[in-house]
Length: 265
Image (tube, rainbow, N blue to C red):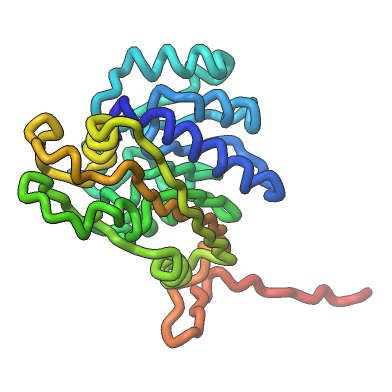
């Protein structure tokens, strides 16, 4: 994502939090990935005013921008927060935080740009505490469907790195031991008066490789763009259980308590 699409990130973050209105969750530490200097920080601060925020910041966001955004949204937790760049995660495959260290992972419009969403889910499982929650949104495979049938050689479209629909994601969550996944999807249609504006958003959404300024056949472009937005959340429960095999969960014998009986006098 880039700055021209910041309004969309804020809008989807607002919808994500609305979907959590019915969820009861005691949050001390939140991991935001990707974090950006938008309104979502203010929304999260209002919902969880005492929580510490840990940030995996998106590309192009400076440390000063994040410091300023957090100072405006929740100055009380500013100095209890830390951040690391998203590039660090994409290169190492790990968040720079310990195991079992957060109660909520909040991920807005990231998964469609990851080559391996399953690995992301595994990493979220690692950092979530028992009873923690992962909540996320991402662009589904129908995003930009109006552009797929166009015959414009200069329009070099590219597929989403992970074109998972909500059923794929729900299955992946269950496969990685998350409990009670809730998935839903909606279509958002963006209307444009100028093709140049449509192309700017297509580029910001990472849907094409070409330079918008180099496309001459603007008259054949549609005046709208469809976004398939997938939402989901799931719980990290039973973290002390070994991963199930053949639908059977195996427990470490050291985790089984022994009940003793004292002799009566």
